[in-house]
Length: 89
Image 1 (cartoon, rainbow, N blue to C red):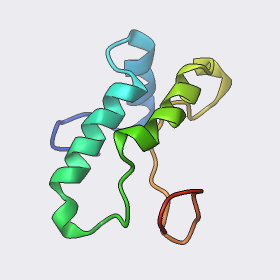
Image 2 (spheres, rainbow, N blue to C red):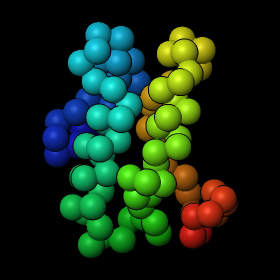
Image 3 (spheres, rainbow, N blue to C red):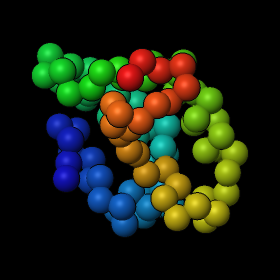
């Protein structure tokens, strides 16, 4: 799967990009957020996290050892029937 920016979002490819230093989770989230904003007229998301809302999660991730979590840096979407504190669902 690719976005309009042609970033390969398959897990092994993301992990390789992170390991090589060609990409960081912060860079990827910036790209994906921009793409999601461009497509907002399709109403795919109830709420897109702002940069300020994403920041604590990115800081926690960046402070975590890459190999300590099997899905470190892999982006995901929270479905609207799952609550995330402080975010409209």
